[in-house]
Length: 357
Ligand code: HEM
Image 1 (cartoon, rainbow, N blue to C red):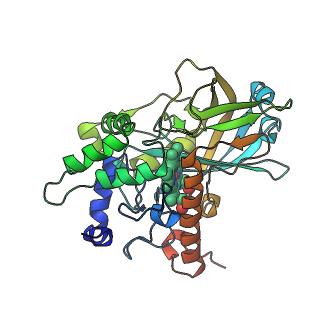
Image 2: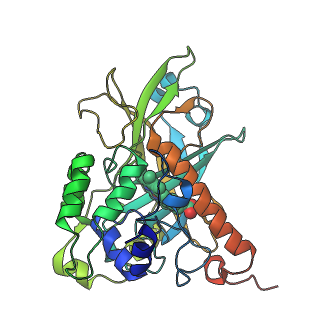
């Protein structure tokens, strides 16, 4: 069977199940697309979804809500990086909370992947963009492995399960994915965005005033305690329980996350987001994010932002992590597709109601 034929056999519903298995990270990647060399094309990473997919929404993490807030740096960060975000007292933030499922109408219980994206703009107009999940590491060492995982974990219509031989072949080629699949299976579903830690997973460099380049990975560490929902509670939870909880909580008080930098030591892998660095590596709190309010994504400033994590200000540099560059291409493609749909007037739902004059 050709790859194209295989592709057309699957429905959007079946896809939802596939992505639930792998943590619901994305919903519109090509799971059988042809790959060129060792690097998948952006077309392979983000395909045109079926006509039933609502126009104007993100091809992954489609269900989300915009938020506003502020970032305040800690003094410690200034010694590691010259980035303006670490010297300006308060930096305004536009962000987005989302769930990993692609379908913008999915139930919040459809995945245990939850996410935070951030855009920090300093008063010299430099930008820092981030997109993080609650997963402490990525599934595979590269994007091609991630596509292979979509294929390997696809549910067979006949059995309702992935093909065990296909899965075994995949795990032989990408043994690092085992710990991610295990994590994904046992990770509790968050009962609220508020207490979730969000991981950057890719490596970056902080550049100090003396030119020192310290490799780091960052995490947004929640001040609120983590709450889990399981079993019957999860089944009984409302369709939008995570977003409803967020609207309700933020109507009463702000929420806070610390930006924690984990400092690599020589030999720690900088080009493989599937390999966490040892727990005992030094951690530095670089600042605190205050989230003060939410705005529905059809109206909020986050709607038209491409949260490409390779966009960093002077004082922060990207690493050679191949997943980082693959993300850049994929996000750009998804962004262009959805903005084109909005621009051509096809996306009335994604842009909300027109303002009354
Ligand atoms: C090969 C790897 C990956 C691919 C191909 C990919 C692809 C995508 C795509 C196409 C989007 C939609 C972008 C848009 O329309 O604006 C997206 C969104 C997102 N991805 Fe990824 N992704 C990858 C890895 C990751 C990783 C490692 C993380 C977390 C560390 C992550 C977190 C997110 C988040 C949080 C969003 C939503 C951003 C927003 O709110 O706009 N992704 N991804």
